[in-house]
Image 1 (tube, rainbow, N blue to C red):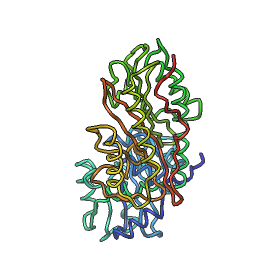
Image 2 (image 1 turned 90 degrees about the horizontal axis):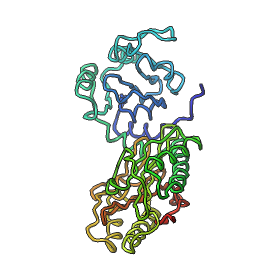
Image 3 (image 1 turned 45 degrees about the vertical axis):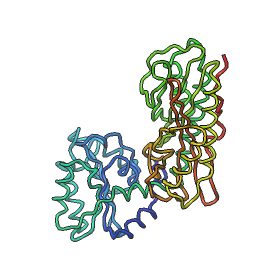
Image 4 (image 1 turned 120 degrees about the horizontal axis):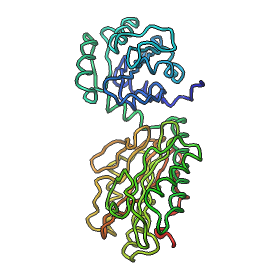
Length: 385
C-alpha cells in the first residue's frame, strides 16, 4: 500500500525542538501520534493501547513507532517511519513473522537503549497523559530531563502542511455539497433522520470516508448546540432546522453550519440571520497575519454587538485540523498569533424565540491574504415550500 504524502510539517517540528532545546519527542496523544507518524490508527483513544512516536532532533537517530501487535502490519504500510515495532496486545501473533514485545514499555526500553538515550532533554505530553502511563514513562526516562510539550505541539499543528491543506479543502468541498443535499431534503413531512441520511449519502457518494460528525437541531432540539441523534421530528411549515456537519477526507474533517426555516419566519428572525452572516464574513475575510486570537475576538464581538445585545459566545472562531477545534482559538484571552497556513472557522450563534441560530464558515490565511472555502454555499434562511 502506498504511503500518503506526509502531513507532518517537519521544519516546524524541528524549529520547535531547537527553540526548546529538545533532543527527543515522545508523543502518544491520538492527534499528535497520527500527525508525527502519518498512521491514522483507530485505537489510540483506548488508554491501554498506546500508539507512540519517538522522534529525535539528531537526524542520525532514526525515529520509531511503537503500536499494538494487531496494528503493526498496517502501521508498517501506512507510516513514513521505517522502524515500526509491535507489542503483544489484542493478538499474540499475526501474519508477520516478527518479534512482539511483552508490552509497550518493553518495546520503548529497547528503542531508547539502541539509540543511547541518556542525559537528554525529552518532550512528552505531560499532564495530558494518563496518570499511570505518565508515571511509568517518567520511571523509564529517569536520568533525562522531561519537558511538557503538549502546548508546543498544538502550536506546531496550527500551521498546516500542503497535504493537510489539501485534505481540509477537499473535506470542506464535500461538506458544502452535503449541505446542498441536506437543504434539498428539507420539506414538509420529512424527518430529521431523512435529512441526516441525505447529507451522509452525498458525502459518501462524492468520495468522503463518511461524516466526522453531523448534528441536526429541529423541533424539540431547535435550541441545541450539538444534538447528536435524530429524534424523528417530522417537519411542518414554519419549523426551524439547523445542521452542524463535517465530511472526512483521510482523517481531516470539515466544520460548517447553516440554519433554515421551512416556508416562513418573522422579520426579527430574518434580521438576526442577516446580522450574524454579515459580521461573520466580514470578520473572517479581514483577519491579518500577526493578529492574536484575542484581537480577532474583540473585533468580532464589537461588530455583532452593534446589532444584538448580550451576545452569548465566549469565542467567535477556532483553528481546524486533526482536531475539530485547534489553535488559534479566538477568545478574549488568547494571545496565540495567527500565521500563514492556518485554516480556521469563524462561527456565530444567537438564541431567539426558542431556537439557536448558528452559522459557520471556513477560511485559509496565506501570505497573500484570506481565502473563504465556503463562499459558494447558499446562505438563504428560508427554504421555499
